[in-house]
Length: 173
Ligand code: IMP
Ligand code: MG
Image (tube, rainbow, N blue to C red; front, side, top):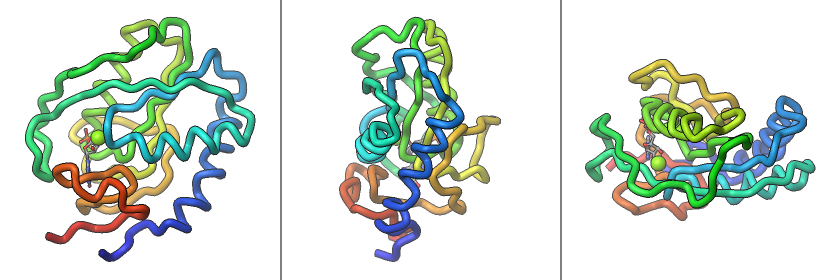
């Protein structure tokens, strides 16, 4: 499959992204990285270690949101399938996901976490498709801004396939 973002590009971008987060958020309060399963896991695993290397300790937690359907278009109706394990009240939260597309997932999850009393909520995604927004949502920390294409790999799946592909490719059927 043709690479849109190569393994080397990801490996080079991660330390810079972690440094950016550390600089713009110098003293987070009991930081926790929160991601919607399962697309977030590959990026979170790498970002977590990159943050550790620049001296930003943190916990990790996960939730599960469904948007119905297994195709390449989400329906726009989100539902919380499984909640965080630990309370986030008073804590700083970095939401982490593979990709921000319509913005609905990040918007939904950030409202959810804020409603639980998080002290501050920021967002980080490996890839951003700003041209696809269904609602206005700005991601704070973006690895790569990409065009409107359906991508797979590095956590992004097509009906569960391709998640473990170590680079990001454009799915062309
Ligand atoms: P949003 O809610 O439309 O922003 O989409 C977010 C979710 O849709 C992401 O967490 C991904 O799981 C999925 N998604 C969006 N675009 C793609 C893509 O190009 N490939 C694979 N999954 C995608
Ligand atoms: Mg996802």
